[in-house]
Image: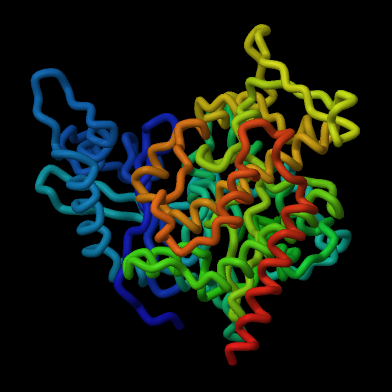
Length: 491
């Protein structure tokens, strides 16, 4: 028997058709979903149509749209969110007692009558069966083949919401034996946000692609040769079923990975920056060596790529060692993307000129042909590198170009850790060339000059002037070793 806790609303979103606004909350290990709908089709005794009801107000105001000549119900999303949160807070004690509230297919429908009295009811959402069907059809994960154990997620209590991509968030949960893991996957909340829900199943291409992308990232780790600085395969696959149709076998909806309480590098960086201090150089050297080792293994042993090498994708373990995570291979952050990988360049490896010390060099050609795309338009987010993804092409046709593109990302990540500009500056970058990477001119930043020079080489705009991953790994391994020896002598 669960003890009732206060209900905290964590997300508010709309379905693609803008006919329903959802709110996902968290309480007592549960993650209930509440809906504010234009038509109460689930109600056996639907409330009379009321243009001023709470559901009507929320739907009308979600996109700040009001009827001509009439003021908006709310000043903005923030005020609308406050009313939604207050309503859920008020009705949760009664909702918590509903026997259906713990079912993953349950949604709580909310509306008000003409007297502003709030009415609610639990119902099985009509798209839940489609959710199970799509996971089964497009998941391509097999526990026996992949040698991964399974746990049913229905009874795993949620403990803490972490960050992560909007369509594949991270959540800390506890297993029955008390262990904490990070769950990553596509839950019913995410499905409701991206599923069109029309009779034409072809319109659901976006959510289908998201499920496929999730599965691909998992299989990348399942097939990855192990390395201490790279996230291992998931500890468990998580299963979910349809309680109303028990004849259907449970399907895989996500994964459980070990939980790192220290999270990524950002908390340590921000704490150091708040003090006006640089992180200890010996720690930075160790981290740079570990980052380089992870990327070297990725390209030269696993023969694949990461695509988004940045501080937020390196977790810090209990020994202050780094682990590279997030293998979605679906998008890249603008501020760390190599400029030549922005989707507007083609590349080939050619014989180097006689005066060159290299046997081959890379020749880049600006693409001037008709518009091209190798990505679903729903997932390109208006970015050239998502319209035409060069990473999977270069993986097959020009691995050296792929390697040097990720050396650039390593260089940008290293520069950010050493220089760390304001968050607002980093968040404003829409293309990699917009970020100006420089150093303090007075030399008082405490950063060794040979570190700066090497990081600048990694960030060279001409990929042929960048070092390869072997050179990067060797440089920082030597620096880290020297730092460790110096520490030992001081001790």
